[in-house]
Amino acid sequence: MSVAALFKLARVLPKHGRLVYCLYRDPRTPRLWKVGLGLSLLAIVTPFVNVPEVVPVVGELETVALVVLAIEAAVRLAPAYLREEHEAAIAAGSSLFHRDLEKAVDEAENLRERIVG
Image 1 (tube, helix red, strand yellow):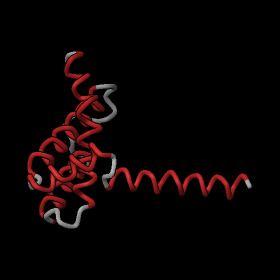
Image 2 (cartoon, one colour; image 1 turned 180 degrees about the vertical axis):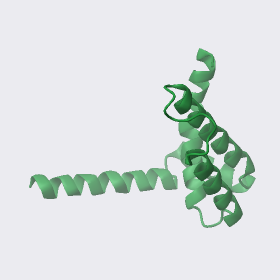
Image 3 (tube, one colour; image 1 turned 30 degrees about the horizontal axis):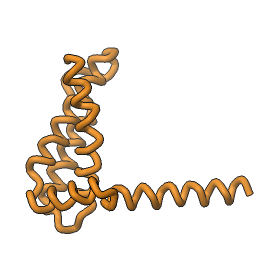
Image 4 (cartoon, one colour; image 1 turned 45 degrees about the vertical axis):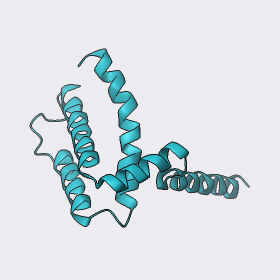
């Protein structure tokens, strides 16, 4: 894999990851899309993957490549109107991902305050 491809992956993966998260959480996203994504990711993490994880570097790279392919396919197969709506919300910082992340940070801070005192 070239350095340029790695930089592209580093830029695209977080964006698509947030988008897939938002699409998955949206009740309007078709159930078949959600099941397909879940089955794809489940197939990737099962022990039936061709290159075993015990092979240093190669095993992990195959898993990463398959996850990236699954996410790319999920983004392409999502309904266009939902994808565009969530992309706009992500760009504006008001997506489901951003709201859930903010809640998680608030909960972590509350928990830390309760523990520390």
